[in-house]
Amino acid sequence: MPHEETAEPSAGRRATWIGAGYAAQGFGYAAVVTALPAFKDRQGIDDAYVSVILLLVCVAAAGGSVLADKVAARWGSRFALSGGLLTVAVGLGLTAFHTPTPIFTAILIAYGVGLGAVDASLSMQGVLVQARIGRSVMSRLFAAYTAAAILAALLMSGFSASGNAAALAVGAAAVVAAVVAGGSFTSLEPGRTVMPELAELAGEKRHDGTRHIVWVCGAFIFTAFLADSAVSTWSSVYLDDSLTASAAVVPLGYAAYQAAVLVARLAGDHIVPRLGRIPSAAACLLICAAGCGIVVAVPSIPVAIAGFGLTGIGVGVLVPLAFSSAGEAAPGHSDEVIARVNLFNYGGALVGAVLLGALSDPIGLRLGFLIPVLGLLATIPVVRSLRHLATAPTTMTPPATAPR
Image (cartoon, rainbow, N blue to C red; front, side, top):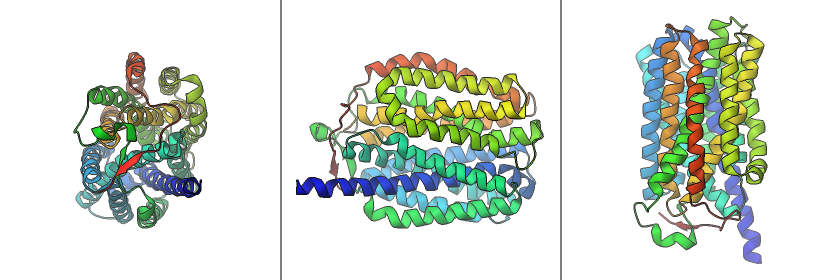
């Protein structure tokens, strides 16, 4: 009994710091994407160049995710998370200043490396703490990301998305990321996630079924971030350029999206276990498709904001559902599997952000939102494959760790 009394507070502290990491990541990313119109004006660049930058950031982030897996395998995912947060902090801080466009681009690429490392290592730590606590908490951890993103979007709206507000938001995000990186290190899990009953598999590079897990869960991550990146990157630009919304209204599409994501994530840990993962995943895909679909169908500011919000309901549940499924289906290799699944994030971001930007001139951003609609509908048949994943019990066994 005394051992149990000391173990739970430790798990709680870990969960708190991991949640703080999600919050720092969400605040920083939201500050960047809602500042895109201000950055465009400050740097004198167009949508096509923004698309090039986003492409480079996505490639850099994919590299950061791979790097996080290598660092986690050698020293533990807390090193990957802390190093990624520090890289993010430096990148965000430097974007607050006017620099020549090539240097500005290089700064965002460096930020992308940190972004990818943090994305992957946060999910590694999140799956670990969920297993240690013994109940579903992944959605609530992602909710911390969303709440911080909403705060950043509202900050931009309150200052009418001026250049000064952009500098203030990214500067504040840099400080938050640095504080979390410094404060969380000793509280994070120092080793890799290994379930006791599968500990003998921990030394293997992979086991049968791992590749299937990566492809199935990766498909959901790809599709979720296809929709997420389309809305996160282009909702502000669409409201600004295509619908000529006022400066105070421009960030509200993203804010509505993140508000819906937050509500969905706060409820997700309760709803998904009751409905089951297969019905939940199918519903998420259909809801997201409907949200992006009405943005295409009705070129109106209120309807567009509502459509972005509807999209957020599906994305909010689908992302933690996919990462939880991946981690529980490969408990002896969860760090490796999660890092590989996380790579699909950037594939979705490339299609959702870069392709929409490339199509903004020939067909317009409104029709560009058909891309996530088609992707979401095409992923529905994959839902059946969730049935074949070897999932862990509902009451999860606290993991052992392989120290590094």
